[in-house]
Image 1 (tube, helix red, strand yellow):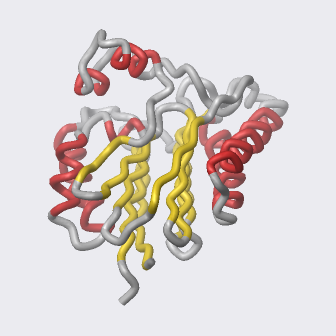
Image 2 (tube, rainbow, N blue to C red):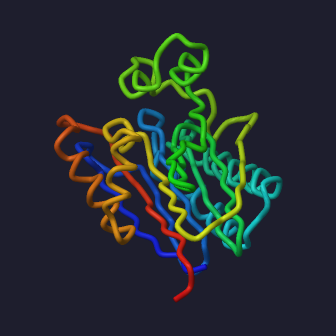
Length: 237
């Protein structure tokens, strides 16, 4: 299987970027972490977690091993909290490992993974947020998630105990595509638009650029940091 990828991160309308992205098509390892604004040193937390997750992800863990890897990343953030000024830092994270005919992913928080396979684009991760619980409980619609007042209230993150990540896996087939993204991106680009832009793209970079054009037109001044990783899996030439 030939893997190609494109990653992008931007501070948006904020003073600095608290997102961390790690991306290697050669290793089949992809990590996106979003440091929590308002908790101090979010960029440090996201970098610590991303480094641990990326190193472990390159070894292509199974779902259970990936959950253990998240615990190690959580330990790294907790250790970092011992330094002055970093006591409250936290981060979300989403990871993807591609090897052979298997895709394995995991996440904690509200950074997302979407998977395109068999003509359908599905959100494979469930946000660990108050808003997503309201959606699962039928209080709001799926589209309301992007605008609900509680969307930034997270129930799980790296940097606190207990750490409760989730993991999944699927068969990797030629023609599959993946999108990892932070909430600063998915709040302004909807799943139907992601699919439409994917179907028009010949490369991961084209897919990303198509979606970023939508984001630029829709995001307000002062919008959050935004990051994404687009990945294509294709037959070897």
